[in-house]
Image (spheres, rainbow, N blue to C red):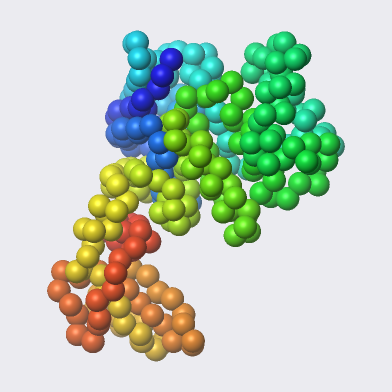
Length: 296
């Protein structure tokens, strides 16, 4: 089937001890790269695990919509798994097995039973993620970025229509991160790809649509550029002494601080220009922190 959209409605999830993980989540996730942005503990992984059929919610619906009748994610789990590619946070590998052997095993589990077809699929995927030259290297010797690229290779088995990647660039060096994000961008051209992360730059660089969540609730949805435009004329900058920070935090909504050459640069959110501040072009990080501050 063709999948055009992932639709989530009124999704709730609690854990033992009445810990709310998700509260009334409503999301429409179209084809392409979609960024799910939030701090650690926001509920991102809980939502991804629920969409990936690894846990059931307490309430709500999830549907994959496309041609035909679509798929009810919560009731048709086998059908979902046939079109799903999933790279969880902290994807583990067998350290003493090489890439081609393990990916061949995953392909068999995915239902690719013909040896010749499996060999061709494994070779094509390892080439796509630029690991073919390392195919006989034990996975325990892979760098963090190489392991993540292997994780994407296994997620792409079976031509998935929905791909979920949870915190995929955490811990990667800049070169590996750039290589990995370029690969995701290529994949997202014809697939619904949900990128769950707390790294604002990942969403800014890749995603045409996004949602910001915290404490299990959706705080904002839309296009990153629209959210940035909404802050123009409301974001201000000033350089202060570090000792002055507390008084500025008391007087203004300080949305970010940076130490530059021994002095502290602050951004504040205000409808009017505060005394001593200059305008600054906002970015997605400003959107993120304003959204979290306003919801606190």
